[in-house]
Length: 161
Image (cartoon, rainbow, N blue to C red; front, side, top):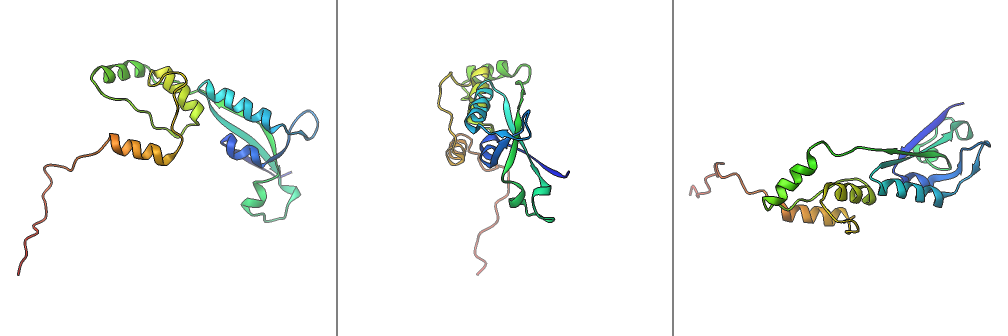
């Protein structure tokens, strides 16, 4: 039996699921329980992926991706731990003591990012994590302006007429 396996961020995969794999062939899917479990794992600093599948015998011989990635069967969640590198907290403390404002920019889920930031001393528990790419990008541009290279030659702009 051919199947399509799907993995991704819980907020992207869970809405596509209609049932859950269980002891019976397909059990009722409790999306709210899966979302709660994913959030709880992210709040502990885990990177969380949702896993699902689709039986391809149920659809046409040459299905489009959109036909495959809906009416999925939820399989479960995977939490991956990626602890900060050894010495990272000390390096960040040294930066702060030198007057450097430390910022963390990541593509992680906000709850995961917050847990890691607290663990590294970048933020306090309960600090708001910016979630908009636009606000994060603006903040990064404001904080990290790169000056033009001082030794680069400037083109001669004198008029030749």
